[in-house]
Image 1: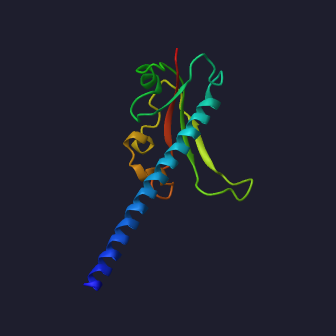
Image 2: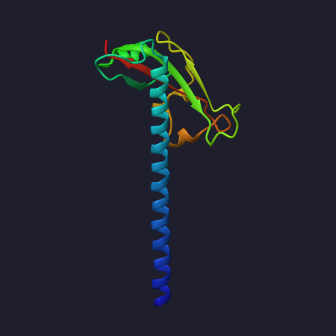
Image 3: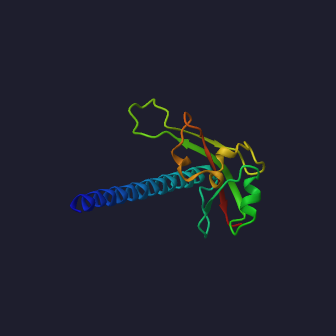
Length: 148
């Protein structure tokens, strides 16, 4: 009886540990997506002619791979497109001043640009934020939108 109680306690502890590990992975994914979104906002800020001025906050929206940012922005209250940014960054701390840390493009607002579905965050899996060039992803794309 005491052996059974011991093994039940071991299984319960292992289950609790597994659940905590799964919660940690989900939290890490959420933080990684948030960091990517913050980088997208900074990329938008640097890509706009006026630097994102105006009396309203501006918006970063996920870029659908088959549509232009003019179309995507135009369907929201942030109906003017300033840029279509594509960004990617390497994980880990920089170790030299010549180390490449990331990549960026501005495709412009008027066309879908590169239509690779891997660049579409909405179509990505939750864990895809951790993918790299070696593991199956290069960029995510975002629309830089403002109220017109």
